[in-house]
Length: 115
Length: 115
Image 1 (cartoon, rainbow over the protein chains, first blue to last red):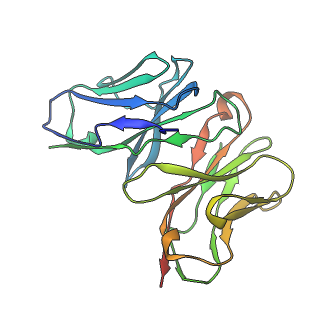
Image 2 (cartoon, chains in turn yellow, cyan; image 1 turned 180 degrees about the vertical axis):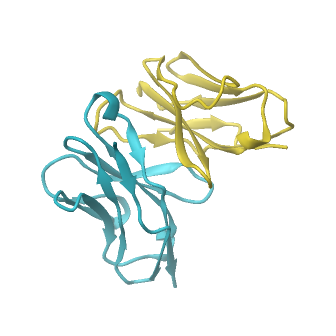
Image 3 (spheres, each protein chain N blue to C red; image 1 turned 60 degrees about the vertical axis):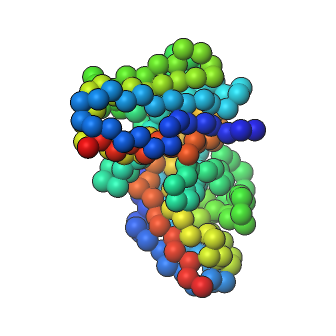
């Protein structure tokens, strides 16, 4: 079990640039979550997918943020244009669909720094 | 409204002593409760969960948690702390389906085990 794989691990970019974060969930998992973690706001759910379909994107902060899941083994989170306040650690997590007792399996995150 | 409270930002324990990390919750219906641990520069890892049944649940790395319905608490415990237990610990709760379905996270408690 390779776990949830995220890339890149670190991303440093200048304000205004486009940023794309990538995630490969655990094979067989059919729910995928994008979280953002900051010291000030803690862990925030941005969006989650069930069976590749976005279910709740109410946590996406602005239209600058978008997420896609073209197939069961890949998802992206895009920020365009990026701003310094987007600096955070972004986590992807996966689980078996929608069971109340299904734990989430997290990747090791992408640390984004926008200068 | 659903909520999770971890009243202590930081807990300091001497190695070999018992540890407790506190969590209280508010949710409609029967709660599903979880503990996760986060080591530096890593994603969150699932430790244990309470669904139903025995109020004392055991999890990974020798951790256990006690569900107390009357006090709406789910405190994490370990009889003898190790320096390697030093990490950030998150409590989370999931309520019934519908608007309460998503995981609600606590703010996290930093556990420091001193040799």
